[in-house]
Length: 290
Image (cartoon, rainbow, N blue to C red):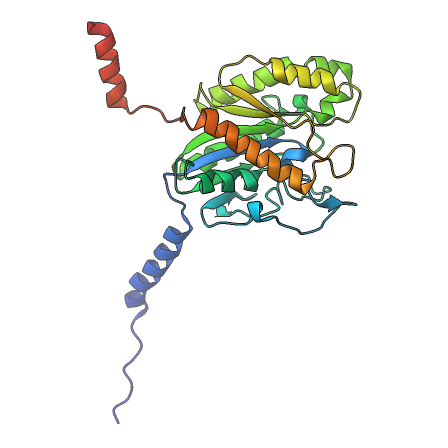
């Protein structure tokens, strides 16, 4: 019997190795035609549904089930399949994270057939216990949110909306409550400017609860914001699992559907997709010569 052929030289194996690596990289890159949503604010956006005594019960409702068509930008800025708890590794380490509105929102969009893309990308940024002042331009929270939004766009797609649920911490001090409207307005203007998206849709959640005595002051400020393309859904009346501050799991699911309906009513009809350069030139010429 003739001896077995010698193994191929390392140089001949290199193309095969590169091909295998290339295939794995392509599999990890998400589609470029995805719609991206930024989720920011404090604990009720980060998710405390099912969290009791700082432990999550692990219950994932059907509305929040993982889907290959819903991705999450991970803490280390990689796209991965999204699953509850969506803000794991994003929210502060000393807080247990549970169910929030993000997964229910994304699944509601997909199941409606009106998502606007075959894949949705969620960018969790919320951190519990934060005040509006903590999100001002130049702060760590703002810089991290902006960085994560920019990284999410690097693989293609468009930002559909910023989903914002925050304000419970601003109900403690009168100065924070009365400054809420101004600070929220600045946050929206700064983020739009830094992303180059002057018409970015912002859907904010009006508070269902607060840590202090000025909850109604903050709610009135949220309702009174008159910036273009800023909408809100009202969480007041949704059940609180601790009877005080955090929405229950089922309340978070309901809120996710409310956010999806708000996006259907406004965002889907006004997609944040810039017009191609040639169309802009044609429109400008028509304006000049007419």
